[in-house]
Image (cartoon, rainbow, N blue to C red; front, top):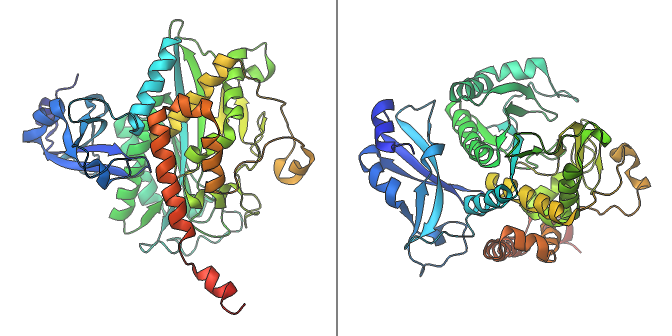
Length: 435
């Protein structure tokens, strides 16, 4: 295990950010001087859990964030600070079962008992906005079809290249960066990894993008639908499962349809079976449902699903199988909690393996133009309340994710929904004041 005090001396680190992610995906941290890190590494940094989005009360004892030294990252843009992902325990040492990284670790262990390792890559999209967050930051980025816009990406070269340089320095093996389908929107890709490593990198990536954007006088957002009429921020996940004994891709079988093995089909079957319920995790905000149920955008397509279907190499469905041995889940959006995304993929997939779930028929039509022709395929939730109810009515997924987590998550999400519906909006005043 990495000795963090020695790491600090070797790297010239003065402070450590002991960080954890709460149920709503908010990143929380304490800045700890290097002189105190040895004690924190052993005992954890104390937090009042109630003060963040966890289902705890002011009467609960301290929650301790115990740093996972293997995750430590020296900030490339501020070398005297290092970031560390942490696991949450309560005073006395009992793990906080509802904490997202703990949920993921438990499911990774469950997969390991089946001699399986889930590996994933994520594709988080984000907008670069003006500091007040009201409009895109590049006034010249106005093309009707801005995807891969050469001039637009170069106008933001300083931001994108700086982030990519940092990923190269960190050994993430980034391989492409592009201007995405909305004006002001970008995507950056790095190599897939084990589910926990991907979640930690995803969490750090969001922190890094926001920090670098702020350094350049901009504001980065992963909000699912920050600009009306434009394509929303997705966070597509590429998924494969590997046999830990043989080192081979358990999803790959050249003799099967699309090169997807029977195990791969069953894992996919679990995703399809639980899709409507897992949406509350992959699409966790009020705003999320303005992306997956959006009308056609100015670019011509939303690039987001609204029906539970799968296909080959066709981006209009919820799941596509672009090549042998893996598939892409296109449902998640930019607001997704990095740890819960990985956890719910594993939970649903293992459920499918255990029950030998059938993913159902494959469709190859253009869902945006001809989706009405498909009968019987479930529709994804129309709003957050529908998603909450779908999860609550799926006892198998709730149990797989953990009853303590599920209870806490549902409770806080209902509070969020009730806060939203009790809010008096500008739209209501504009449309009903004179009725």
